[in-house]
Image 1 (cartoon, protein in one colour):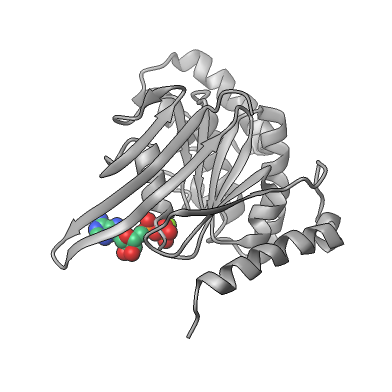
Image 2: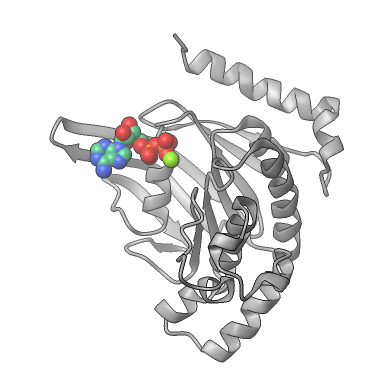
Length: 257
Ligand SMILES: Nc1ncnc2c1ncn2[C@@H]1O[C@H](COP(=O)(O)OP(=O)(O)O)[C@@H](O)[C@H]1O
Ligand SMILES: [Mg+2]
């Protein structure tokens, strides 16, 4: 890999709560290459959203280091875009204005921002919905507005925290295809957080697997399936083999009772 754009070394986070300290992450290490699609895969509660908070500069780690483009992450920064599990759109603002939100909060050029927003709405297939309000859009469409908003300020890194978890199964498959297409067209480095094995295998170049809480890196997987991957890819043997290898890993790790 050429110089990674993002690097986490032995990252640790301990929350202090009224019940005492909660170790959320301990020994998480990962790198993200330029233009790479990386998934961080781990069971519920293992510290994935905690990682997102650290990478977006909202939470200080208790140990280890995180760097973006060679510089330590010490607070929120404009070269990161975030897409959350819920679309978190402002219901009283149009699609276009919702996409423009980071342009306004970062004080960027609004005229240029509008043109860029229209390009991105085209990219996510919503250019005809620029003047619609969130309540007039389906869940999948709202999530695509969230993706356009995450890209509007041309971030070096796009962080996505289980962005499709709240969608129904058919919309989720459609959004996986859409995200692959958008990623291939936009050429961004993506860190995609998920607890879904097929989602991680379908989308990723590489997968970092976390243990149950406190999350630490236990394994890295290359996904060498050719692109563009299609719905047919999921019916093929290599796809199933990748998923099975990950499932076996988790069945050793997480005991369900
Ligand atoms: N502010 C907080 N205070 C105390 N514990 C927290 C806080 N936020 C998260 N946790 C705990 O840290 C662990 C990891 O949480 P989280 O990062 O949200 O996991 P994930 O996103 O993988 O489901 C969980 O056990 C959760 O209860
Ligand atoms: Mg989470």
